[in-house]
Amino acid sequence: MQQSDFLKVVMPFKDKLYRMAKRLLVSTEEAEDATQEILLKLWTKNKDFESYKNVEAFAMTMTKNFCLDRLKSKQAGNLKLVHSNYQDENTSLQRQLETKDSIGWVQKIMEDLPEQQKMVLQLRDVEDYDFEEISEMLNMQPTAVRVTLSRARKAVREKLLQKHSYGIG
Amino acid sequence: MESDKIETLLEKYFEATSTVAEEESLRTYFSGHAIAPHLEQYAPMFQYFSKAKEERFTKKVPTPKPIWHKQAIYRWISVAAVAVLLFGVYFGREYQERKDAEYAYAETKKALDLLAQNFSKGTEKVAYLKQFEKTKQKIYNEN
Image (cartoon, rainbow over all chains, first blue to last red; front, side, top):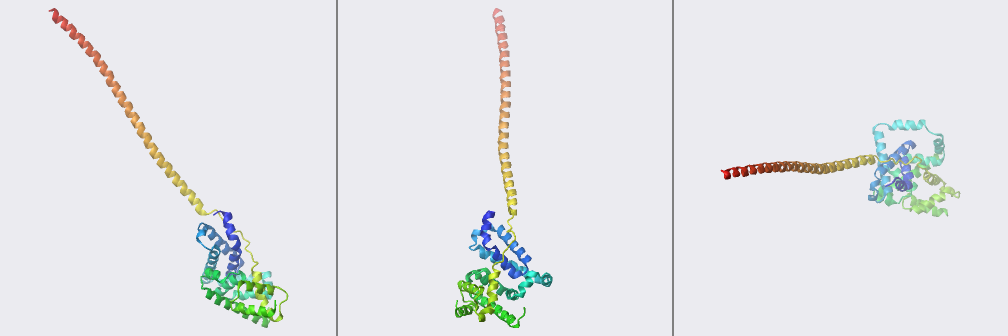
C-alpha cells in the first residue's frame, strides 16, 4: 500500500483515535505520542489491511489496548503520582478556564470514571458509534456495553447534579 | 422541540436505549438557546460531548519508508548475487570444457601431424632401401 492510500484510510478516524487516547491518558502529549505510535504500528501492518474487515475498529482496539497498557505500566512503576503532580504544576490557563465553567466539570467527572465506562461513553456519546461497533472494539457483549453506558451516563449526571447544587466552581 | 418529548428522550438516554439519531437530537436541543429551565442541569453534559468532538490530532501521521523495505533490497541483492554466481559457475565450466576439448584436439592434431611426418620420412627411407635392393639384384644377376 502506498503512503497516499494509507493516509486515505487513516485520515477519517485518526482524530477519533487521538480523542480516545486522550480520554484514557488525560495528558495531551501522552495522547499525541500514543496516537503516533498506533498510526506507526498500523503503517507497518498496512499489507494486511485487506484481512481486517474493519480497519477503524481494529485501530480503535489497538488504541484501547495500548493506552491501558500505558496506564498499567505507569501504576506499576509508581509513576502516576509524578504524573499528576506534573499536571497540577502545569495547569494551563485554558484548563483553568475549562474547569471553571460547567462544561469543564463534565470533563473532570469523566476523568474519575472507571476506564470501561470512560471508553464506552467516549465511543458512544462523543464518537457516535453504535453498540455493535463498540462491542467489537472493546471486545464486550452488546448488552454489557448497554449496561456500562447507562451506568456511565447516570454517574455523570449524578456528579453533575451534586456540583450543581453545591455550586462548586 | 417540546420539553416533554425531550424528557422522554432523556429517560431513554440514561437507560441507554436511545438511538444515535435520538442522541443527536438531544445534543442539538441542548446546544440551542431555548432550553427549558428544569432541563438546564443536563445541558453541560451534551454541550461537553459536542465540544469534545471538535478536538483534532494535529501531529503528522508518521509514514516512514518502512525498515523492511531496506531489508528486502538486501535480500534481493543477495538473490541476484547468487544467480550471477550460478551463471558464472555454469558458463565458466562450459567454457573450460570447450577450452579443454580445443586443447585436446590441438594436441591430437599435433601428434598425428608428427606421425604423418615421420611416416613419410620412413617411406622415403624405404625408397632408398628399394634402390639398394634393385642394385643388389643387378649385381647378383651380372655374376
